[in-house]
Picture 1 (cartoon, rainbow, N blue to C red):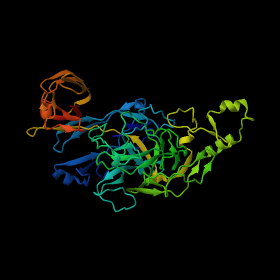
Picture 2 (tube, helix red, strand yellow):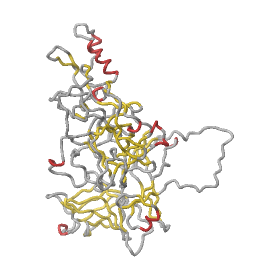
Picture 3 (cartoon, rainbow, N blue to C red):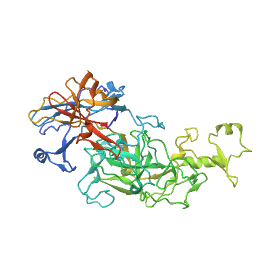
Picture 4 (spheres, one colour):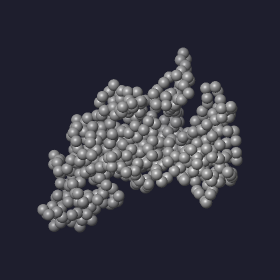
Length: 521
């Protein structure tokens, strides 16, 4: 579910007299959440087929979550989902992870240190398209395994998996920063599992490998990876949408000695601000990620400000009715008016005529070129806001991409609960679900910290039971590591040097819980 939510402004008290009374008759009341059933491959099936199948995947979307005026000051909320089987048996109440409340998208330039508001490399997101900001026209980016008849960039692979838009359901995607100079052929080591969530598909070969959180900046090349199917999008440049359907792009850099990270389609574009929650964005599709056009003169060149190179036609990921395809831009890229104004001010100011207040107000250091012309030094991400207080380096040109190519980005999170129940009986409830948050090792023992631990829990290393499990508290359990783990058939090989075995919980009623944590041998 989305780990960010907007407050609602539609529940304030309004004094009206007399009160309006509405009576509904003649139609069945529709439940707030309808379950959509899918096969293990992702194909949608009806409820009758789902009842006859032993392996199905169900999804229920609730649109009833809102923050009223009384809870407006709350910074975090959570969702509780009560699950009941078809035979009336109450399975339990499952809780989501914490959801941060955001009243409205921030217009301030975010710092990369703000972990909650910035979108980071390798995290999950959701995207939705909304024409003219109308909630009734909201469509979410999703993935379908049904082959589409559309041939205009449906991004499908051999088994018919493709990107689609839905009105009633959304899919989580992992967003990755990619290295466009890297190919799958020259990758020496590729992770077999997602570094943040072992249940997610492994990252694509061209994704950056980093052990520290990396904030995603505008104008950077990225790919989207579906969590459910593993489908990876083409390489795209994430663009900031300024007003309506106008996107912004960064200044062109021709200096080969420029030692800061660059982006853009051809790797010659300065990066913009960090991507923030609930921002409107657009995704420019890169035609050939390995192709860099060097030495081609641009038509628009006003002093310091230059438009980066690009292939033609320029295309963007767009929501075309129920199909997700490519939208070709019809307008040309133009420098923003602030660039023209700044260039005129700089060209009209010389050292001989500059007044003392003008010199104090000049914030950017200047450099002298061989022809005597003076230019401002380019700013870059990570050098501080004092170098580029206007933000023009990462947003100096604009182009219209249409409403169909404008997406709202929001961070999401998945709370995964995997369990097994004995065949001979079904426990009355399998919740509360024991959750591990951290593991520490001391000699031959492990200390597990988390939530919802109980005295009847036993720790298993794959198919081997721990010789000793000690319950310390509701949040702490100690256990002894079995001696002969190397002989277990449940060992998974990470690489030639590293092996791991899954950690499981078994309650006294026979329910087995998957913790999504591993012990590394």
